[in-house]
Length: 192
Image 1: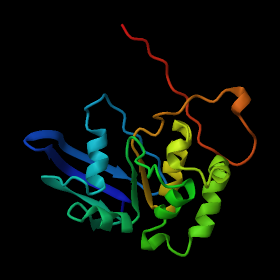
Image 2: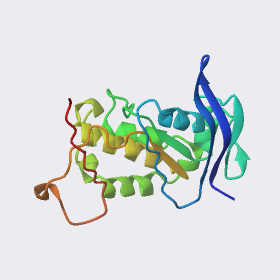
Image 3: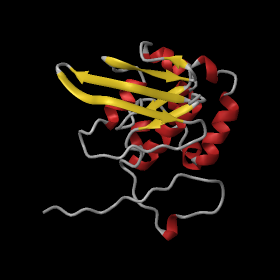
Image 4: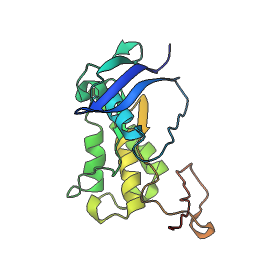
């Protein structure tokens, strides 16, 4: 049994069909990337898995249970966490408050201290800025916070929409030794 299974879904925005007969399986412990041009339906797929959109046809199962008809908050409780494009932080709340709100699902309660330790190990800058407003962080720091907040939910499936948005490449002077961390390099494009 796959962790996530999408079976022949069609998804619309109003009268406009965006996804046509999509089928996909995600096995537990794997990393899957969807790559495509703007407007190809990547974000729409994640929104549909999250319950923000409902497929007109087909179904989505998570851990063997049909979730395509559930409300988004019920899908979150099952362990499906979606970091949308643009991060959607609470800008007037502190870093710590944003992280704490990530632990709201019942499945995360009682594990907050352990998970917070993991988040601070992955992203030490968040510990240093824990009392700082989220809106004052750099784009890369905000992305770390969005990922950290999602990890606080104790996800079984973590979906990231445009995870490298706002991140700058690391240079040798920014590299450090220690616990694993996220690193992305942005490609450079020129306009014609």
